[in-house]
Image 1 (spheres, rainbow, N blue to C red):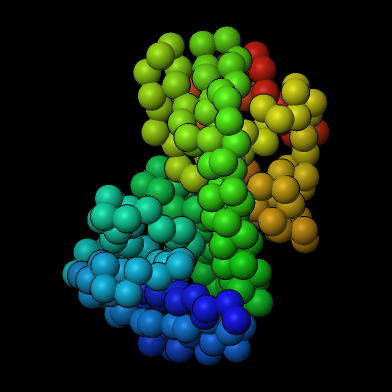
Image 2 (image 1 turned 60 degrees about the vertical axis):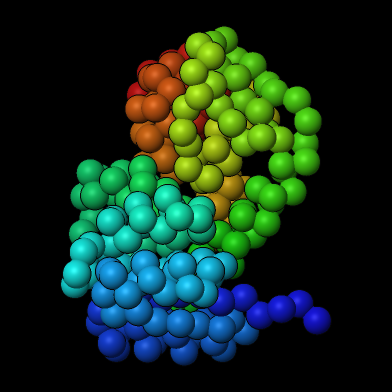
Amino acid sequence: MTPRRTILVVEDDELIADAVAVRLRAEGFDVAVAPDGPSGVQACVRIEPALVVLDVMLPGFDGWEVCRRIQAARPVPVLMLTARDSETDLLVGLGLGADDYMTKPFSPRELVARVHAILRRAERARADAAEPGPTSLGALEVDAGARLVRRDGDEVALTRTEFDLLAHLLGAGGRVLSRDHLLEEVWGYADGTGPRTVDSHVAALRRKLGPGVVRTVHGVGYAIGEGGA
């Protein structure tokens, strides 16, 4: 029998925390709940969850600081919940190692779908670690087995999802991939939800690797190769 995986929900709104916990338990997960930043970090160290559902606005210290601390201790998949929808806020969370975000109010059904998708990506990342050999693109070197990226010989720190997106674009060999395709193949969302998720991660890749690594084909999608935003 497959062991039950534990999800940690860090959320100070009791009604939201309870609703999320009930829905996740119905999906077969064990669920722990923490109501503030410090207890969220402590719970993450204590129980080593398979995934953290993390609110941004928390007492004690905010979700960004929680994300920074738990990722420094042990990389763990994170789905952030935010009442704010600015591009800057989203990029901050993704840059700290969050795998995805949802804006409040959200559908519990969609949250569960995203939790399952993030966990599948984490499983796939572990399987990819067995793949040998780096791939090169100009000054960029991507080693799927080690999940390392170097530019001009210097290692570049990417989040798990940023790496998965880059590897998928590289694997397409320059073909243009639509946002819907990337959402389904990289994030595991088959319903076309969240095109801004793709845009935010592409922006993060360009910031870290340079503007020419990912090419935009307006009205179509993205491809690996030379080109700007």
